[in-house]
Length: 224
Image (cartoon, rainbow, N blue to C red):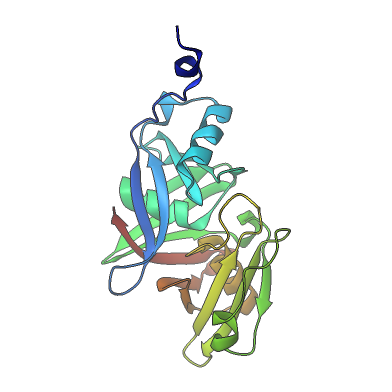
């Protein structure tokens, strides 16, 4: 028997691809892989391997669609919480709550936007680096790996409009994140005000502080 055939990876379980935090014209957004039946791949090592193979900035495994129980992976890490995977999963599953290792994430649909509510301390660490103008953010090169940098500047401070770019710095093939809910959540908590963020090539993230230390993060989602 051919050893090369034996060593070939097993076919990936069926998965959806979503674009999360699309712009007003429906374009852009951050790609998200969603395996709707996570029971087909229960082992963490197998999930990590599939997330690496798919190559999205995050991949979600749905372990219980009715409870909203999900498991989130980057190509190299398992995450206790992440913004764009939660927004995408909430939109796809149409549930009032998601359950992730960090805690219970509130969710709601409101017209063209899907919203989640989470705590800033659930978000993985990010370096929030402010620049003097949107043009400076636009001109930034990709920094070397080592830290997760969220570069931002005011486009219109009075209106809460921000220009941002996200650089994961993980050396896993994702040099720049098109849209990053967790970083937007942290920035909202830091500034303590509602924000309208334009990130990447044209993605849009809306945020607002909520009572008791929570932050709401929302955006448009479409199925690819």
